[in-house]
Length: 415
Image (cartoon, rainbow, N blue to C red; front, side, top):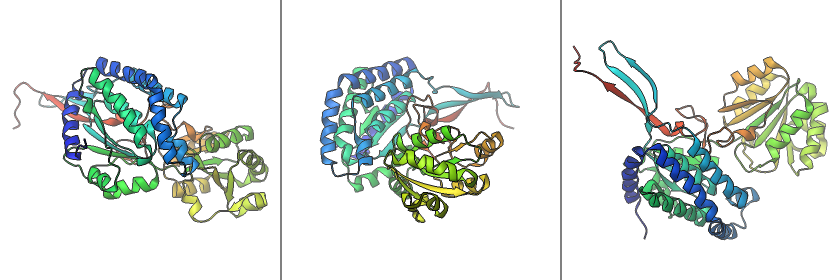
């Protein structure tokens, strides 16, 4: 039976009220049961995932990589839920408290956002990550994944809902939209009576569509045009290792490096070396005039569009810069404000990079691949926010809360 969006919204609103009052111990128990259920139902999940992959067989490899589940990835999703269960519950925490001039006791208290809407593409892990984080933070969630992962997402949601119901709570804390048309997506983005916030996760095209069409408040998660800058004082062994990891470890994800900038003082020595390491891993190299002059036919001239493109593939564009100033200016101009890294032994250069790069996550001597809720100790993430509102970077439990002021008096009236 197909349920209307309005009906789903009503059920989510009712469930959110119940969930906001649910004790931490029960929420943690349910999350651990969810993790157990994923492992127990692994073959059922993989069967549905194989059916999705069969229909997506003509899609690019970077797309099917995000869609594919296997034993290790299911274990990873389960571990993410267990980590979320082990984290402190932000609900009810008081950020601050004071007594005003009239003797009123004022406290700033953490509460759930309410009902969270998720729109995402072929990433089944988002189904579990979003459900777990929203559940722990006291929010109901309505999920709308891409059609390519529909069977997998529906099976995952079914498993999670069964656990919630068997624990005596309202299973509508987690719901999934099974109609994948654009019309339904647009209606979902305008469900202002029931959704408190909408979080898109996926390509730049998807995020732009949500931002442009939604009437519900949006927390904008970002595409990842991530940069590495190899400074003139970089240690070459470290730099090579970081570049190869950031580009090649999993190129289909948003925290993979897409651009490499190299200081002109070290370009002649470092670029051929790192190019060889990248070519051995089948990375296509594109570059500016100076990079192409050094690498010759091994490097294809970059277009204007290349500098602003997130490839999610084995492609890297390389630029040679005259100075740290030029590197910072270039990154701030072309970045999607996701993750950037400098490789240097120069402390002053590293501090300037940290202070002046306008991105959610800024690294010194480390791979951008660490921009991840799991790696940051959040258990999972609901997305990586590149905006500048209340959430920025990997979004964990705290970013799924808001505040209310609780005021206690003993008869005060305002004169």
